[in-house]
Image (cartoon, rainbow, N blue to C red; front, side, top):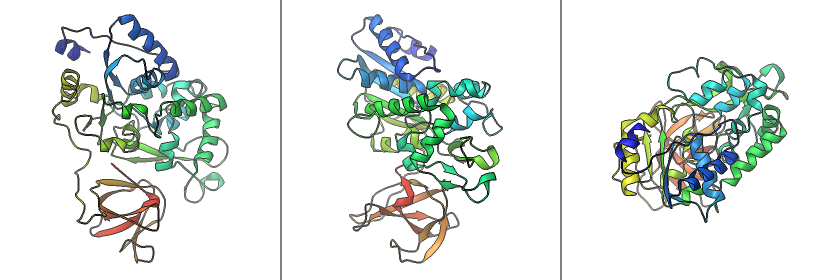
Length: 376
């Protein structure tokens, strides 16, 4: 706020606060009232974290009458955050108790379970249908957690949400997440040409949880219950923050990545400079942001594309010597494994592509797209 007021001393700069315990849908109505009372024909919105969901709801609910000139969101969990599943059921553990974590999650870690579960705002942060399709949650197959956890379907996951949040909140949260979509199966803000997005990267982030067997719906303790990577901002997984990688197709003027955690991104000098340029010009020069990963050009040919990284979404997924199911298996990967993608080849007989990946131990191999999520 201080920086924005200093940069825009000739304009009114206002702070809108909201009750994060409530639904972002209700907070969006308050945002509309706040904007209407300003009396300005248009406003620029700068939103952090859940604020981006509030603004998304305001835009979608008033799509033909909103007063948004430009909207900028930073570190917004567009497809939810698996961390909420752990925090609602448990107190903060060592993997979560790190400096710079989002204040909301820190506060939630100290509140009794029954109180947290009753908050509709918390339920709306649970991973969405889109997220589960790309990164499934997992559950142990036998009581007392014998065996290896397996990927569970969205229906199985939803039944666990009913145990965690109760039927009313779980159902309303699902409806709210769907309500933010436009004509496509993604947040309507993506198609608004004056929307701009920044995400934090490079921090250890929970991307999935392993559930206990049974109807308790309680994720396991840290040692066995959390699946992490270092693509996200420490709170929001990269796939969620980027609408399942869809933002990667945007020009750099509209999409930026910063090596920053969830909270610190609003203090990141490069991010602030980008926000200021975006408000001033609408089409700013690219800021000096750190890329999420190095962009890797694919090989030649019309059936290859430039990709960058991918994440494995199944266990014991075969990596083969050539892009066909009869080729020799080189090695196997499991859910959450992150691999550098070199190029993609479409399989004419399938809806899935084959991806050539760089192996951690050296060399290259091919993974079938049915169990591999790319686009980031």
